[in-house]
Length: 89
Length: 358
Image (tube, rainbow over all chains, first blue to last red; front, side, top):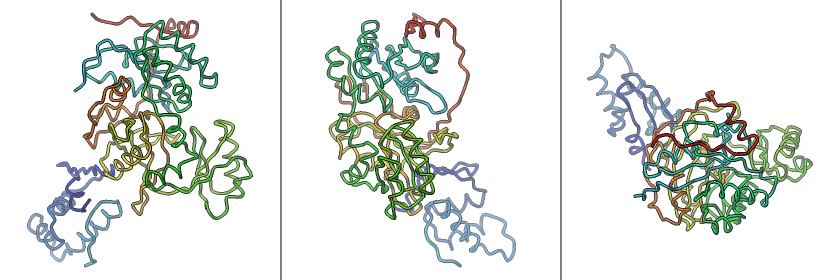
């Protein structure tokens, strides 16, 4: 099964509670994490996700959003979450 | 579509619902949840205090004590004959590993009485035994952990490099202990033999996530239904206290392969470990429903009802869909019962209840 389909199968509630129906794992995401996950489910790249976050959230000047997204993906992967492999920024 | 069965009488064993519960209560709750079933349910118990006998929720119409498996096939035959004379049975669903050989031996005779079961054959039961897991894995194309069958305590000192520690020491029916060296393994060997007898199995320990699949084989190599589950909470005995239905296609494929390879007839539970590297290892196959089988009914597959229909010679359409994310969370509670109920079970070995309502 391809990664994108597994991501699409993740059930995400409005409160950020995530259930992976393949593994039975559950996660709690904050608003930003939920936005990143929804973007991943749409098949967006890290660059597109960063652009989305800049448009959708108030971002402090100098914040390295690319690194934050990358860290999110690493943590998600550690949890066994099916996210795409990305190069470190 | 299932024909209405208003007058069917189904007997179920395994009513000892402790913190390591037998499957009977889950099986009966599943049957009661089937809209087309309005018949009678009879509990077959081994002890007058088996807690399922006292459950008002599952609505037993009658309960009978039956002899322990150690008393042999003859004792079971005579007791079932007496039960059948008192409350004519249509179907029996045995739910305990240790009683299966006797029920399998009695299946042809019970059928001649008009009592039906849907059980594995003796050969199927033997093939899925813990001691023959390697052979089963090879035949089904499923990866299994390396293991050795131990027949005396000295064997643990001869395991050598083929089975590095830690190991899991398992009993032939139940019980498993993780051990980290030969002395610990020898102690576990003796404890296991004292409880369950020989043989004992030493299996390589793998770290990973454990999944269980409750499934029913149609006896012709097909799968009548299957629901995988991930345990979310364990009791101090290591038993699942909460779990969630999951839809990992690898787990369903493992069940399918098991049925294709064995033409398994009846219910079973596959225990499968998913390692950190994403390998799926078949750890063992239990030849009966697990205690958590009501989760399958809650998720959309009433497998005990499927077994009932198969036992009656019907060919129900395979159950393929279920709702991933359906949870079970177990509860312990105190049931209130009357001393008359205990007295009836302890002295006459039976408890007959009048049906409430019209």
